[in-house]
Amino acid sequence: MKKIVILISGGGSNMAAIVKAAKREAWADKYGARVAAVISNRADAKGLEFARAQDLDTSVLDHKAYPSREAFDAALAERIDAFEIPGQPVLVLLAGFMRILTSGFVNRYAGRLVNIHPSLLPAFAGLHTHQRAIDAGCKVAGATVHLVTPELDHGPILAQAVVPVLPGDTADTLAARVLTQEHLIYPRAVAEILKQ
Ligand code: GAR
Image (cartoon, rainbow, N blue to C red):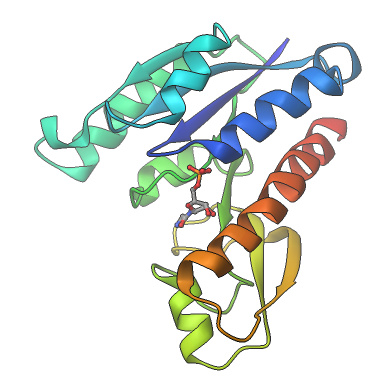
């Protein structure tokens, strides 16, 4: 069984969408894959409650407890690799995981480390994507699922969704519109990877 490990920092709605899709679409039977674990860098991440209720293996790795980014990433890799079976590399999904990862970590999971970013990349890499899209006068916004490479928010694009930016939108109203699309494209993109 191919294992999927999902990293979160907050609400975990994308993680929940993936877990629900895996059940609904019987990924275990279809692709021999299952979500094995959810790891958060914050103990108060709301998404942990959903993951626990689903009987998923959950753990918290507080980045503040480590002296450097490298030390945190090494501990994170160790936690992820605990789910590895020889010959069956774990698929690692970043779902609202708000930590920049070292190139050492990214290279270790090359080709099997996926992220969702709330903008139409390559536009608006980084933070505050919705406010920046509004301030730039964009008529559309959206989200991107991409493979993670060492350069932040720049890896090969796997899927995108587009939504309109409406008159009177705030960062919050636009984020909510984009998020509903994230919940569709992220599970779909993961299923495409598992099919390969
Ligand atoms: C999502 O909008 C995701 O695209 C974004 O954080 C939100 C997490 O929501 N990710 C980033 O900004 C990554 N740089 P969720 O915790 O409910 O899935």
